[in-house]
Length: 299
Ligand code: PRT
Ligand code: ZN
Image (cartoon, rainbow, N blue to C red; front, side, top):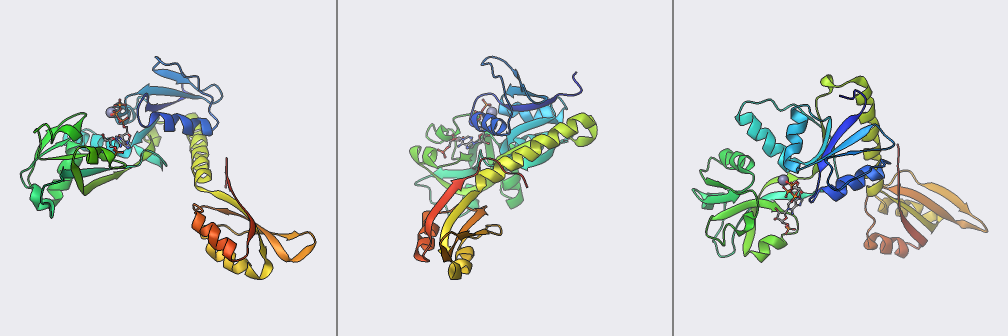
């Protein structure tokens, strides 16, 4: 086993694979991906990628096979609950919540069901791929139900007469709508996260590599959330402009040549700049307003 190379497990193909690979590329990793291969090597950092099914990633971390993994917190949490049921340990650390894979695990019922509260699902048969997260939710409310575990196509369980309700992941809600279902309760909010095995079992060389990658990931996420704003404004309107740009750091103010009453303002804002904000800036008299994406950032 190579003491110096860090192994990072990501989803081979599915909803998290593009964003996971893209994040790593944005961190400067040059990865040589081969379609059928389970392992890919980063050429310019001592990191090896393992391309696997997402469901295997929590176990690979918890059993110490790899040091890092990118996984939806829904899968991670479900795996933890499964292991806790069988009294197996769940050693891992969430190093960073990521900005993709955002979804929610929700309970949905048929459109024509008169649903007022969770009591309406007492003793109902509920189809899900997340029986433990569902059980935790119902147990907290003290309501009995009948779980029906399906590892895919959960949304068709009601129309096929297999279940009274379903508990599945939702992002836009289009799948539910297409199947005549209505979302009634959110069980769990999920997003992708970077996880690691517990530090005490790792070689110091590997800890350093992980810290370096983590710093870069944080930089990439911060940069993706941030915008660089430039505009010209009357000097006496500066305060009003900075009040509008919430989430912005201290601005840089520059003299404009040949115009002493106006200045150029440059600022990094960690919030999305909507058209409405730009219109308000314009109303304050700002001109030459530019909002630019930031590629990399380090604080
Ligand atoms: O083959 P492998 O086991 O690796 O993949 P998989 O088929 O188990 O998982 P995959 O690729 O479908 O999803 C991987 C992860 O993406 C999930 O565990 C979540 O963390 C995250 N994610 C984010 C989602 C969704 N959004 C999502 N919308 N996973 C699944 N869905 C499905 C949902 O199950 C439903 O069928 O999309 C449909 C609903 O989408 P909307 O947009 O119609 O609401
Ligand atoms: Zn899966």
